[in-house]
Length: 139
Image (cartoon, rainbow, N blue to C red; front, side, top):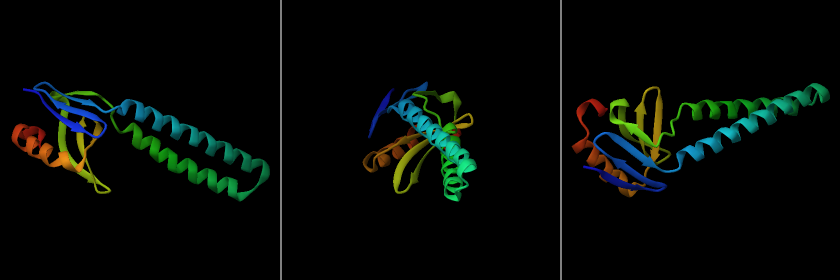
């Protein structure tokens, strides 16, 4: 039996074999990776300009921008944007809160697939997970 939940960016469907997520995460992740890469390039160019001008602002702003966006790049690479996850690959599934916003964290392999939820459907999703998800997938 399939169960579908409406999420802010699309739908979340639980089937007996898979979890299907339609929220445009792949496009968002590509944009985030491209944005971080461009800012890292800007930071490198800023540090290289420092070598010519010896202006310390170029050095420290380049280092700060580069370090910040390198952290964003590493974080983005640890996130999954899969639209279909087989239940056999799910290591854990739980509802978490980040900055007061609920999201579903689906761990599979070494990656985590975050699914942003609204406050109204997080309670019904939590009740569904407690009733229908078997113990090995519940943490």
